[in-house]
Length: 201
Ligand SMILES: Nc1nc2c(ncn2[C@@H]2O[C@H](COP(=O)(O)OP(=O)(O)OP(=O)(O)O)[C@@H](O)[C@H]2O)c(=O)[nH]1
Ligand SMILES: [Zn+2]
Image (tube, rainbow, N blue to C red):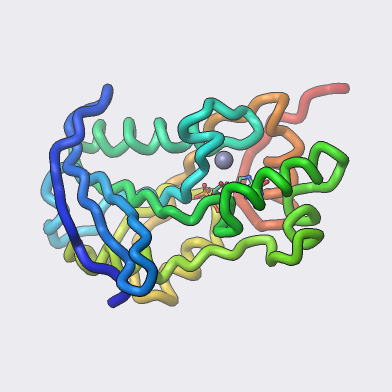
């Protein structure tokens, strides 16, 4: 176990009241949160979103990616379902950190795609460690989930970390002219399952 559960409190949102549970990484002291609604101890797969931190999309209204839209849609979906979990996985920029993500964006402004930019900076395309998410789910007592994602690799890594994924539920929102190329790259180079609407140029 790489984390411990620290504190919890109510978190009212426009879609309903979640319980916010804070965790701390034992090795680094880094914090993560899970937003929980309803009875997640039921003996059936729990609707879950594993959302990776994206300060620019989640908090600063960036249209370069789809993260902010996915965050909102996931919370709404969980609230409509009356039960579920959103893990807010604090590995910004696929775990290269905010400042390196800004460097990667600068390279993308010069024409590189999201994968090439990471490589140019000396990183893999995706540096995230999802075993922390599996640990958070274990601390919440959840063994089986229905995962909101477009990324089949995320299913694979969470399963390798011991989580049973009963179903994948697509989360395709936020496509716009600013992220069209970014979403195309995620589909073509990173294997995301997306149904994009190419615009005529
Ligand atoms: N390094 C880097 N990270 C990015 C970039 N754009 C978004 N991110 C980060 O990517 C993470 C989200 O990952 P995505 O690849 O969008 O999606 P995913 O979580 O793999 O898959 P979904 O479950 O379908 O959303 C967040 O941590 C973002 O900060 C970028 O251009 N470069
Ligand atoms: Zn983003």
